[in-house]
Image 1 (cartoon, rainbow, N blue to C red):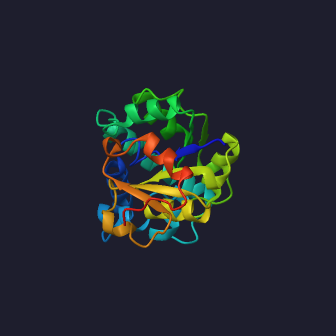
Image 2 (cartoon, helix red, strand yellow):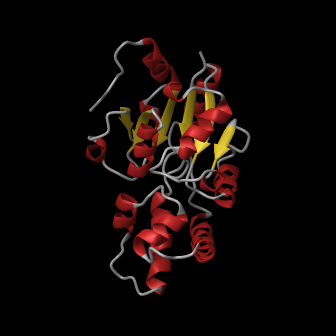
Amino acid sequence: MKLAFIFDMDGVLTDNMRLHADSWVELFRDFGLEGLDAERYLVETAGMKGVDVLRYFLDPKISEPEAQRLTELKDFLYRVMSRDLIKPMPGLYEFLNSAEQHEISLGIGTGAGPRNIDYVLDILNLTDTFQAIVNPFQVLHGKPQPDIFLRAAELLDVHPSRCIVFEDALPGVEAARKAGMKCVAVTTTNSADAFSSFENIVKIIDDFTQISADELRQLFHEKQPLTLL
C-alpha cells in the first residue's frame, strides 16, 4: 500500500520561523502592541493562518479583507528580510531523494500562502519535488484543524493512517493528530519537551540527518509504532 510524507514548509524544509516571527512583531509594533515578542508568537500561533494570528493577537473581529491586507504586508516584510537567509534543512535533499527511491509520495501542507510557497520552494530548488501542495486558502479551516493535511492526503491518494507529517509547530502537530496521522516533530520552533503530550509523534529530530526514509517506512510493518518520548 502507498505511503506519504507530508511536510509543513516553514520551520521544516527550512529553518525560517524566526524570520516570520520577527516580521509579525514588527507589524504589530505599528499597531502599538508592544507585549508580543518572537518567542510568544512561535509558541502560541506558529503555523496558523494569517487571519487567525491577527485575530489571536490584534482583533478577534478583524475582517477577512483587512486580515488579508495586513498578512500581505507582513509577508512582504518577511521576504525582504529573508531573501539571502533561506537555506535547506541539513540532510533534507538526501532524505527526499531516499523517500522517492522508496516510492513514498511527497506533499506539503502549510499555513503559508501561495506566494510564500513559490518563494521558498524556488530558493530551495524544490519546485517540482512535491506531488501535492495545500495552503490554507484551499480548505475551510487552517491548523490546528486537520483540513490541510487531510486534503494533502486526498490529493496524494493515500489514506491518512498511512501518512507521516513533519511539523515544527504545536498547532501543526495537533492538526496531524486530528487527521489520524503519525508525526515527526522538528525542533526548530519548539524544544523536544514541548511535544511530550502528543501521542502521534513517532520521532523528534533537530534536522533530517537524524532520520531515514526507510526507518519511517518500517513503522508501517511493525505492530507497535516507534516512539522516542
